[in-house]
Image (tube, rainbow, N blue to C red; front, side, top):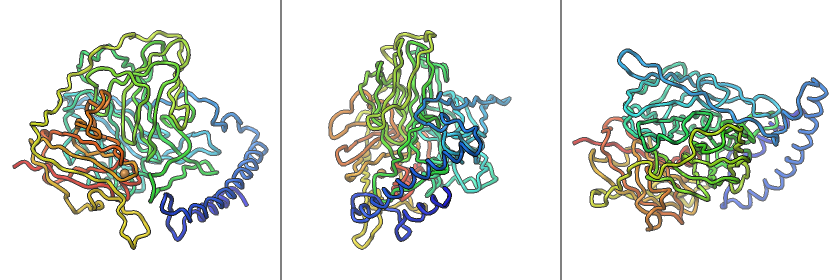
Length: 507
Ligand SMILES: [Cu+2]
C-alpha cells in the first residue's frame, strides 16, 4: 500500500456516518476512535519511515535536514504592499487571491491559498490615516471568496463580509477613507461556511495603518528589521505533505499540532539589539495562545484598534483567534524567545550585532478618552452557546438562541448612538467580533479592565468565567442596505452559525 492509499484509508475512517465529532458529549465514540487512531498512528510512523528511506534511495538529493522541522529556519517576512497614488492622490492596492504552493518542510510542497503569488499568506498592506484608498481583489480561485478588512472602520459595502461575494474570475473593489488611528489589522476571506478552510489554506494578511502620532514616533518602525510581523497559525499535515483541514463541530474548535509563524516552522529572526516591535496576529482557526518572552522583557504597546494610552509591562499575553497585539521586546546580547505556555517555542529573536535605532519607550502613547456610561442610551446582550435541541445529535452554535441567517437582520442601531453590549458564553471559549466598530471594554466580570485591555478592541475572549461588557459609538457609517456581521471568531463556530448581522440606520 503506498502512502496515498494509506492516507485515503485513514481519511475514510475518521468520519462516522459522515459526521466528524469530538468533544465532551461523545465519549463513547471518542474512545472508539481513540484506540483505532493509535493503531493508525503507529502505522503512520512505519509508513513515514518507509517513505523517507524510499525517497532517499530514489533521488539521493533529499536533504534530511530539510525534512526535519525541529531544525530552526529563518522567519519568512511577508512582502510589503505599498500603494500607488493616482493623480487625485488616491492610494491604490491590488490583491489577487489564488492557489499556490509553500515549502513547510514536509515530504512535498504543500498546496496553499495566497494573495499576489506569495507561497502562502498575503502581502502586508501599509495604509495611512487620512488616505482615500481603493483596493481591488481579483479571485483566481475555483471557488467563491470575499475579503474582509478585520478591524477596519469602513462602509458596510466595502467591509468584505459574506454578502460581498467575489465569484471566480471576477474582481471586487473596496474604496474607503482611512479614518482610524495607527493600528495592526488583518484581512481574510469571510464566505459563510468556508471562512475557516480558506483562512487555513493560507488566505490572510496583515494591514498596518500608520499615522502622525508623534508620541509613538520613537518606536521601532522599520518593517522586517525591528518591526516584525508575527502571524501565528497552527496546522496539521498529511503524510503526503498536504494541509489536513477539519471543522470541529462539537468542541472548542479545531486545534492543530504544529505552529507556524508567517508560514515558517520553528522560526528565528535576526534583530538588532535594543527595542524590537512584534506585531502579533492570532490567525488560527481556534487555538488560543498564552504568550510570554523568555530572555527579555515584554511590553504591550497596542491592542486591536491601536496604541494603548501607555506601555504596559506584561508577564503573559493571551491572544485569541482574530486578536492582535503589538509588543516591544528589549533584546539584549543573547537571544530572546517568544513562547506559548502549551506549545513552547514560537519565535526566537536572535541579536545580529546591530544596534536598534531606539532604546527608550515613550511614557505615553495615545490619548484614549474613556466612553462615559452617561453617554449610553441602548443596552444589548449577546449570549454565545451550543444550544442543541434534545433530539439533535449535532451541535447548534447560536448567539441569543439563533443561528446565522443571511436573510435575517438581528437588530438595527441608530447612527449616532452609543451602546453597551453585555457578552456571555457557555462553558466553551468564544471570541466576540463585531464589524465596523472599535469598542472599549467597560468591565470583565464586573471589574474594570486591566490597563492592557483598556484600549480599543474589536475581538475579545468570552467564556463562562469571563463576562465582558463593552461600549461602542456608532458615529461613522450608516448601513441601511448591507448589514455588518457580529460573530464568534473561533472559525469552526462562525462557519457553523455563531454569527448575526446588524444595520446602522440614519433616521
Ligand atoms: Cu465560539
